[in-house]
Amino acid sequence: MPAGDHIKLNYILTPFSLLYGLAVRLRNVLFTWKILPVEEYPIPVISIGNLSVGGTGKTPHTEYLIRLLKDKYRVAVLSRGYKRTTSGYVLANTLSNSRTIGDEPYQMKRKFPDILIAVDSNRRRGISHLLELPEEKRPQVILLDDAFQHRYVSPSLSIVLTDYKRLFYKDMLLPAGRLREPRRGISRADMIIVTKCENQLKPIDLRIIEEEIKKQAHQLLYFTYIAYETIEPVYPAIAAPDIRSRINEGDGIILLAGIAAPAPFIREVEKYSGNVTVLQYPDHHTFDKHNFKSVTEAFKRIQTPDKLILTTEKDASRLVDNPAVPDELKEHMYYMPITIRFSTGSAKSFDDFISTHITTFQQKFIYNT
Image 1 (cartoon, rainbow, N blue to C red):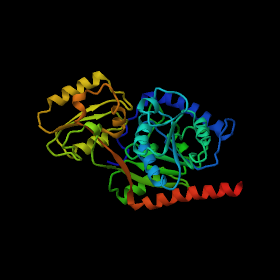
Image 2: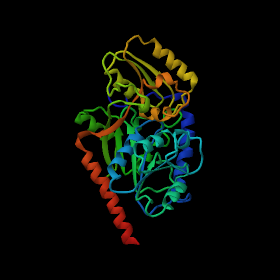
Image 3: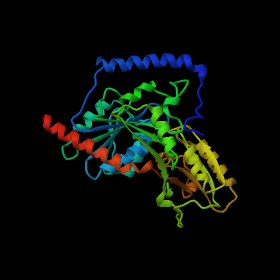
Image 4: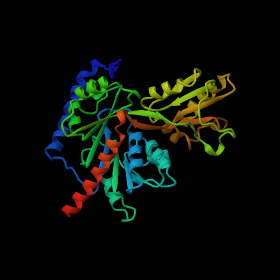
């Protein structure tokens, strides 16, 4: 089946999409005409966003950039911190958790404790706070998570992601589809990445997508896929003595997922075991005692001696300090980390472009000052 052909659209809601589209177009015109203010900054600001709502893989792509840059530059990630209980600007520290900064920022802070992670729905204010840090801590590169529609900030480089299974040019505006803004908004991107591709895409598939995207001369196009890593305990301090690192064929698995697009995760787990019970919840779901009553009952129903509760890395960041998790389940709870890989051997091209962009920006700024 060609990519995106199974997208479900609600055509009954098209009139509301037209009204929504008018409002978004008016807003974009106000920015284009500079009636609404746009701010630029003296350091490289790389935006990672999308045209649609839902999971296109922004967090693993942001983490890829962190790995690429953290040994050369002081890197900061600025996110909105969706569903956090705090407000305003918050700079993550050792006491931060998913409730205070959001699950995705907390996931990145746990994985990369030495980089700056900040949250603020007002990205201009957040960047200003980061640039006010002492010189030895001040970031040299800022990664803006999910900021393509936050047009008050003019990034030095804008990366837009689109899901291979839900390509933006086959989608519609909210609420009939899942687009946040009209398809032509892609023209503001410097780079387009088609995410969650099949591991081995045929050259004809690549050419078809490239033609249908109709990228402009200045735009770069890349394709990535998800790579799953060995499983890790959610609670390593109390993990079973025979701590495991892989799924075994005979395992009974409760698959616990509260993410936007769990289908690839489910398919991956089902490759290893034919005894999988899926408990699926909305994106960024806060698991409560009622949820864990269902988890406990499902876990007890599994008859195989070897069994585990498997979740995503993002869900694990919300579970690790969740008081609703029963103690008797903790030693059985694991998560499966993911990374991204570039198709067609294009990782070096991407890495070199990012590095060149940062170096060129810094040299240009020094020259202009």
